[in-house]
Image 1 (cartoon, rainbow, N blue to C red):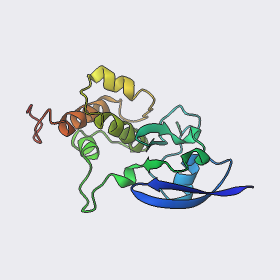
Image 2: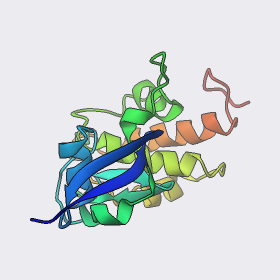
Image 3: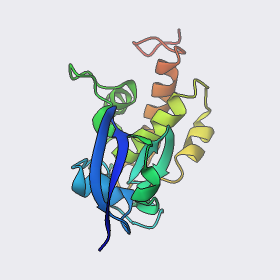
Length: 167
Ligand code: FES
Ligand code: FES
């Protein structure tokens, strides 16, 4: 086994971690750094459960070699909450819309939603559905998830008030 050291930024902090050169980023984040929001689902790029943001782009970490993450900025759900415990608007929208059941798929979906929200654009329901089409959920039937992302996009970009009414 050949080991190397990865230097990157994870959730705003500089990180150095040893890894096997054959390893995917999913294993490094989940097993070595203890970031358990990064889920091991299909491991072949089909379910989206392992999605994180790499330099702001939603990425399946089961298909991404750890070696490629050298110098990159990685964000996972663990980094979204404010220090005082306040949820990020996307997380809060998932709570408000009852969009979580078992929760297994949700961290990956939230990170894809973060990518959408940060563009500052509006999205139709169909566009959101298409953007999340790489994510499989065994529980929710997707309606509440799509509604939560719609709400988060609108909230963050000021298209509705905090009470959910049109601004
Ligand atoms: S575990 Fe990576 S896409 Fe399913
Ligand atoms: S909430 Fe259970 S898999 Fe999506």
